[in-house]
Image: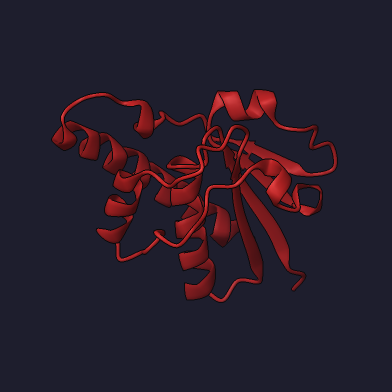
Length: 141
């Protein structure tokens, strides 16, 4: 089976795409899939949101060592599948004419302003949607 390259792209590369990268790495390892995983942002923040790290730890996945990256920092021309996780990323990404592009327009939990309890609820909600979508994607390959 040929190795596939998947890139998860959002705006800041601080929450959604980092969560997707974490789940994709977990499921490709668990199910022994020959897939290389990347994430990046069209306008990276330079950090991973602390609540993204926290809600992933609840699932037993540590994303604290991942880095916030720009699209230019990953081999985007060599990606087989690009998954954009927000409308902003799909509008500002380079032209991906030779790659399969999936668009998952998800709420940005990092932009949600409320108490920590409410913020955690929205991070968990988005995390759980991402997990199901990533699992489905990995199983399809």
